[in-house]
Amino acid sequence: MRPSSFLTLAAASGWAAAASAADGGDAAAPLTFTALTGALPLYPGEVTNTWHRLDIPSGPLAISEFSADVVEKDPSTGEIIPVPLSSRRTCERARRAGASASGPGRSPAARTRSSHIRTASRPSRARNVHVINTRAMPTDDAHRCLECPCTSENRADGPGSPLLSSVLEKKSGWDKCNAPLVEEENTSCFPDKYYGGLFCCEHGTFCLDKYFLPEEERAARAGKGDQSVFYLRYTLTYEPATPEVKPLYLAACCDATGDNDHRSNIEYDIPKCDDDDDECIHVLETVQSLHGASGDADDEKEEYVDVVFMVGHQHRGGLSVAAYLADGSTLCESLPAYGTGAPGEIGNEPGYINSMSTCSFDPPLRMKTTDEIRVVGTYDASEAHTGVMSLFYIAIADATDEGPATGTLPPPAAVGQEALGIPRGDGALARLGASAALVAAVGAAVAAVDAAVRFYRRRNYEALPAELTELSV
Image (cartoon, rainbow, N blue to C red; front, side):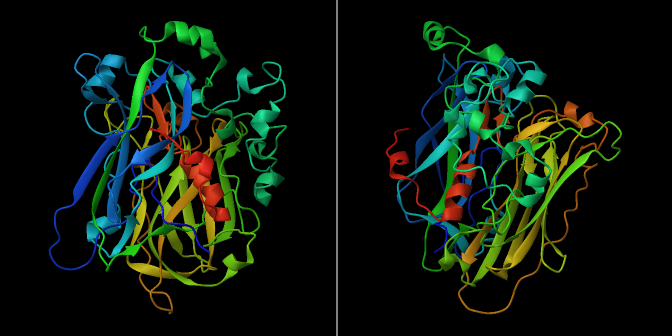
């Protein structure tokens, strides 16, 4: 078995879920489809983490781009207004912001019009949307919020007490960390040490105790000005599918928290480095096969696949996530680009990861599902972080013929850390602000938490549970 075809909700990274339409000849102009999710009303510090059914045109379709951003509506005119990533902008500055927060999401394969595409036939998809309202927060509060610290709402008896069993039970198991994380006693791997991350960022909670509002107070204050109403706006660029196209799906690899025996923990924590540590970075390294860890013997079958596209995923503090082949050659290094523009400049906002560099393979790179890949995630450790990630999305297609590797490796990433404005080891990264990778702060913040959900499910090759598909927008 293999994972099903995919449609990734990637508003934070601005990455398209799939590649493009068919080869050859003049093609009709691509079509677009734009829609909004249902309203996401949030008080400052409040979290929404809910499943939404995203309407899409009837198919099958060749989807070449999926982009998304967080927007709001002008209460007087109904105008749709993009909300910037920065939590330091006023409501008025946010409303004056211009373009999409996610930026263009077209994949390299779409630009080269390769024959590898993502096909879709169902008229809707269930996707998780995770938003935190950090509007009007002091910068330090917003940064902490985006790392989802465990608050009194998550604990049995207030600050410092053990986490509620209901929080701990949300995780499907505490044995998913690889040996390096276990050996360093990473706090994300142990239920008695867990103090922040995905499982303390549930729907209806508040990201910090100081912003908590009881339900009765929320009801009393509804519609009185301090509650923001956001929407996720998403746009598909597509063409009708043709017999010549090949569907893409995600490889199970790669996540720096797993290995060939562990399906990955998805998230991990960055401990603050010692004061006398001149380098002050945290490096997590592992080895995984392309199909990832699985307990099903059927998934151990060696098959050829074609690698089309890769992009990394990191959070605030991230410096690089890289993948290497067994001979030591670089398969892909994905670097975060921190914004260098003016505050509130959508697509180039300072203090946020506005995008991750990508690797494309045209022609596709032929690999075996059993080929091993070394994954290295690097973070600035001048301050502690919770719930970070270092993983890759690898878009692959079934090989149409059996044979050795084809295609070539992309050139090494040409942009160095200094060019990205990423200081190393001097504590200055703390001034850069929050990442847009897992939770994109926007005065609100959006995240494709569905990435973590899909990682858990695709490593088990399980369909989306039926109870999660009976949803309304």
